[in-house]
Length: 199
Image 1: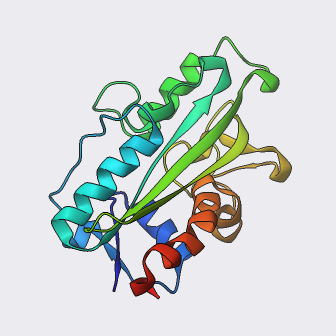
Image 2 (image 1 turned 120 degrees about the vertical axis):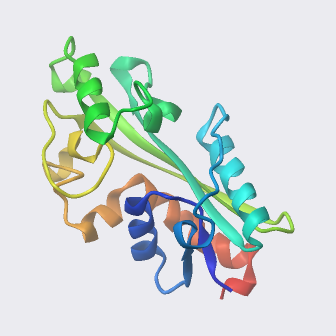
């Protein structure tokens, strides 16, 4: 049985395919392109659960959904669960990055720009079986975007131990370090325990 990845974000889908190989994955873009779920939860877990449950119900498949965000300490944890909707509705990734840099102008020192990416993954079957896992990755917000790979806030997220932003890291390395990768490593054995039909 294939696993439905409940996202319309092509960057996330690419990461899931790399991280969950050789599982057979079906894209929500292909199967249920018109389905959108309002993220009304107050936590990553609540939003991931809303999405996974809705996509499983409509598709009849086990659905894997994530909710993730960037938490900046100097901004009290913002943008957090609102990361994908930070600023005005019309902003793209570059616009949100510019807005974040503007908010951090009063904090030029690296030690005051600490941040983390967080991710919660939920897999949900139409019959109600489910499992979930969380992951986090610590870093620092750079002074300006650097790097061509990745998406979202990756060009701003400096990984100190590798002295590069997430958008500069080779995909293989990012897929070891990222918040999504860490959550998936925890989730992987739970998927087969909870849904033996995926094996």
